[in-house]
Image (cartoon, rainbow, N blue to C red; front, side, top):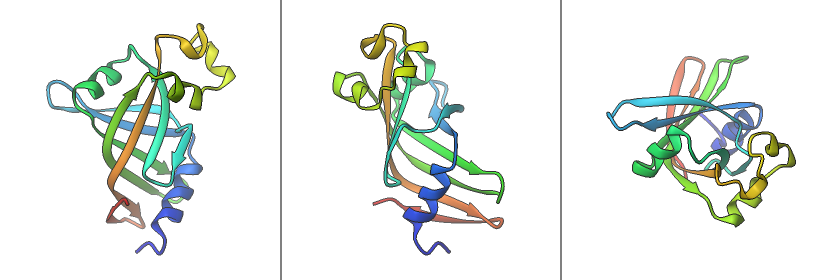
Length: 140
């Protein structure tokens, strides 16, 4: 059992370079996509990612915001699954908040590139995996 879920889960997340995000596609099947780690996280509740406005995942989130994020720590075979909702943000404030100069390689028109958007994930619950056991939890 976790003593401090925010610390335990936060440590796993902060060590990862990759996050796996899940979406419900139009046919009702889940799909998983590897993403760069979130640019910003607020505890274990809110996460911000960069992505393309034109991506399939973005279109699916606009139709059905239900989402998951999974972080895996291979060394100790631990992981955390977070369930919640994903918002597609295209406002200037959100885009500037997580913009980095190196992003111009993906979005040549800069922070105002129409193909650049922010995904904001808000967790509601999760499952922590460690030592071949799992533990469900809620996110406050």
